[in-house]
Image (cartoon, rainbow, N blue to C red; front, side, top):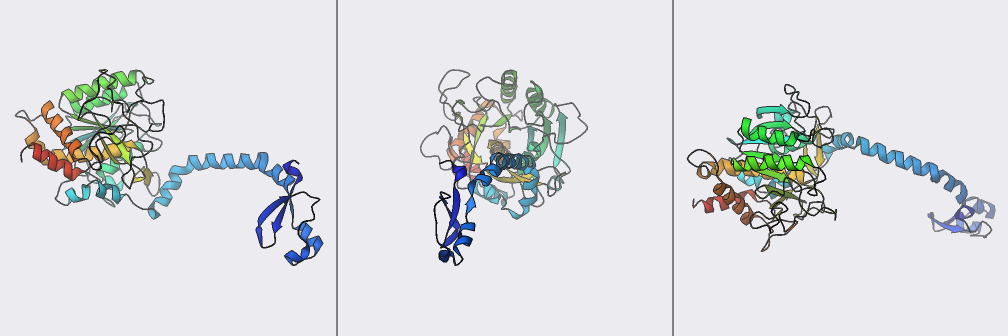
Length: 407
């Protein structure tokens, strides 16, 4: 019998429980419900009209409601954020609060964030040392802003620079901001990311370039990968550290490595972990083989190198939203935390790491990466293609650098 020809009969002991029956079935007598037999029959619901409502109109209403929820989620999230938990755990678990208690907040270190920009008017950024701003999206260089539809650049900046209602990971760094991504988070122009990277190290003379971005390592993004890879290697050759997101493709079996440019040998590729220290399921898996050389990757350059908190991280968004805070998840967030940790490492040990010319040579860069691998938490005895050498421990990283320098 077709479903539309059935009736739903309430159970006497629990009328919220409904049993499907043939309309000709006598069902329970009225006494079972404390009513007459006729009234008992009237308690039954015909399925036919319900089916007509639920399909297609119920399905259409559900679909429309889902779409509206997805569209409005950033604004809904911002309004509910004040009553949700903060992300203090991320800073505590990684050792930031411990090392900050000793007075280290990244002072004297220059970081360049390449992203969608920054809403510099946010209260959390008051007092931030913004050294430079450049727009490689539409060349509107006098308008310091965030062009991202989800304010990705402002979210990433907040994790590092916030200094009012909560304290970021390295709020005393000097920062340069480059817009190289469009509103949807993709490269504004094929060479915009590469141009931004060159601006960071040539014009801004930064110590660290933080890249919460990347392309799939299968070549599908074409020029983005080749141009970006060349620019990244130029920066590395110049003694500038580059930290990049491993990517969010952990459950995509068609992606066989961390993102570009995180897959470049000397770059620090960063995966994401949850509040309990487990690797986020979407965090990209590295390959044992370097696609650029065809050779097996070697310690301490196996991918990813490190993981850091990156799931439901509370941060800043545009001041056009009230309140201007939201949560985000991804290896982008983790990347900023590792860039911040590296800034603190250079604040503490920069003088010893720099040579006579004041620059960082390749030997010093290798020392820093080796100390990062050796200090990672939950690493076990070897490298893991998803967990890397383990989870970020900024205090342990600093101690390992000091040991390497014989301090």
